[in-house]
Amino acid sequence: MMSKLLKRLVRHIDGFLMGSLIVTMIVALCVLYSASGQNMGRIATQMVNISVAMSLMWIAANISPQHLERIALPAYVIGVLLLLGVFFFGEISHGARRWLHIGVAKIQPSELMKIAVPMLLAWYFSRREAAASLKDHAIGAVLLAIPVGLIMKQPDLGTSLLIASSGFYVLFLAGLSWRLLIGAAVSIGVMAPILWTMLHDYQRKRIEILFDPYQDPLGAGYHTIQASIALGSGGIAGKGWLNGTQSQLDFLPERTTDFIFAVFGEEFGLLGNVLLLLLFTLIIGRGLMIAAQAQNTFSRLLAGSITLTFFTYVFVNIGMVSGILPVVGVPLPLISYGGTSLVTLLLGFGILMSIQTHKKLVTS
View 1: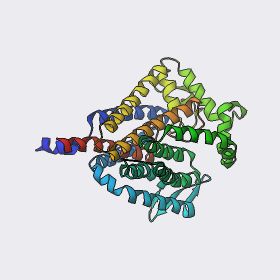
View 2: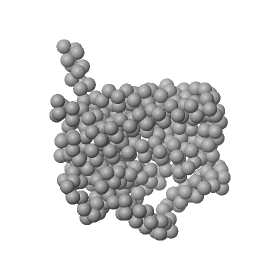
View 3: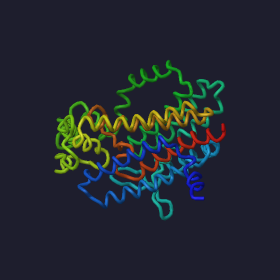
């Protein structure tokens, strides 16, 4: 009886993907313990976050791709309406308007759009798979630009970047022409001076700091400088768990969230970084395999977008900490402290598991 119940509970869980996620999150708790100054309260909170996120992942894994396809349009519409609510009535905190009070709860609608946007675009192109035209891609770009524009106005450059990438991956996988991509890249290059004037002062400062962090070593460049010191001082094998000087002596800012990779690199060195990247590669590889084996266009586009967006999370955060990208406030996926991002990520992985396991059920 118990065996049958257990099989029912895990029948929509992809074993390889689940195992990789669990190992990565165990690593996350270890590095968070060090980064937080051995704060068990912070560890307990993160374990609660993991439990909630994994519960939602299990729910998502048990929802068939057909049901996800049906709710794609309503989820997008609700998300855009909530973003408009944030624009007009949202709560301002630290100079940004990102949160919306709904009765007794406070929500961040931009997180919903990380799932809703690729779902909507995958749904849209799945109905035009025979001949997705230039017009279809233009409509898809508009559907993507609406939430991205609203989120950039909050302003939240990091989240808008991730949502833009999630939508772009659907457009690309749906057959977006390389000529259009090259043309768009050239156009952005030509419009760069205009786009530069549209950025907020702090956003322009971040780009300037990318090229010369020492122009403001105690201000905007401080994060980049301290992260570089931490990564460099880790050497090949690292200083050892709990022995990182930059983090333990409070030199490294945001060390439990955006810059936790610097803590990991200092304590575990190049070898530890390689192993962590291997874990990420296994997760990404499994996601791409699921996308390649998907039964229909909707599932293929959605799985591909979720997987490549996870890659974008990893690339942007590590690039930011390493000093090759501007600081944009993107956490290291599955590793950084926090519940909102973790919930969104594991919801995405739950959808991947749904696409994989429901395919098996249908074809068996």
